[in-house]
Length: 135
Length: 429
Picture 1 (cartoon, each protein chain N blue to C red):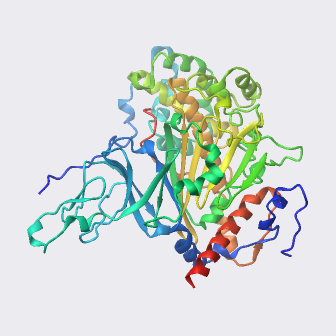
Picture 2 (picture 1 turned 60 degrees about the vertical axis):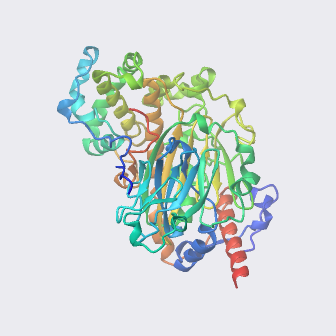
Picture 3 (picture 1 turned 180 degrees about the vertical axis):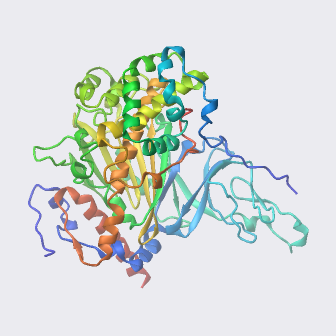
């Protein structure tokens, strides 16, 4: 009889890291540390959930703070490749991805949800899709 | 009421065989009609199930549930690098072989009694084999499903020997799309949802652009090249024996409507940023971050002649509907692939995927996230009408729908299905 082979998914499901384990931002961006617990989130699902629960004042506050320094953030992150981001850069990268997540809220809808939209929690992102990017 | 004439020069008049009349509501609400579609279309036609990049190595597999074919299939890459598809049904006492949606394995083992199959579905091991009576392994392989690949898209067909090859099925309409840089689009995102509506009702919402100015009025309506009247006429439409296409122009002064900006840079980028900087500062920041980051180049003049076939300078994207349920939207440097998989006459699995070039920098990744999130929210707008429309259709109040010229693809879709059902039923009766 043949030996049974254990089947494993090639990459574990991405899950939001515990906020307490998230590295602090690089010193140049320390003023943004106040957003880390809420917005430095690893998955689209976690980021969209935050967008739909944070409330518009919190979204706008986060967007304003990020947008004021977005070109500096991008330039600083670009010293690394996506595969080699150290922990503090990863935290900053997740904040940048959250800025993209809230962009339609502030630039399309002026509210967190799509106007008259389909339930976002029924439109489920496949966080295990094999072609997803490394971050 | 059904003898509406189409004026000369319209798209509708060009396809006179489709008529210009009203479209019945019955096919969208009838359980019987859906049973006919299952028997004569979905179980007889090539169906797109995924891309080769999803299973790059021998032993990589994914599982797709195809309710319209009453089955679930395993799609796997074998040791010779070929893609194989088989029903997810053990030859012994019929348990499903693969439980996970995706995975990597050397062999498939049934978790019921431990029967083992190789990556081609051949039976290779049976516990207590001597207790069976002259069991011949070659009689008990997994049941194979016809499977072929076009431009990296994997298709299956429930007919053991399909009447038409995949190439013969696709090439009359899409031969001149071959060579599109699908192989450079190696990063993807996927979503899915089950929508309580007929599969055609869902597809129809994506195969016309009449709705864009209205349904997408808050989001990407400004990405579209509009007429003075505010509507969005297509550059052109093409209808074939099975498939159909629509080509659309974008507003070059927008980030979403000028996708070439990120890979072309220069004047295209300057134009896209000209308005966005003040109106959409996050969009503009994302585009600035993305310029120059793509791993590959996407020269517009290298696109095959069937892409942007009118050669419009303002081209935004082509909608390609591959019969029956596959929607492929091709843009200068990314593409969207949707399937509208029927589950019941009023229930549809909507699978949405978008494929982008790999970005080499974190800034490029920010751009992709911006584009992906905008697309996802636009899809939430597209999906917003479907269940309401289905409920309205099921009231029976309206027996027909009326279509305008730029909704030609919806008309074509109805006629192709009617023709194939009539042909199939004429030969079986």
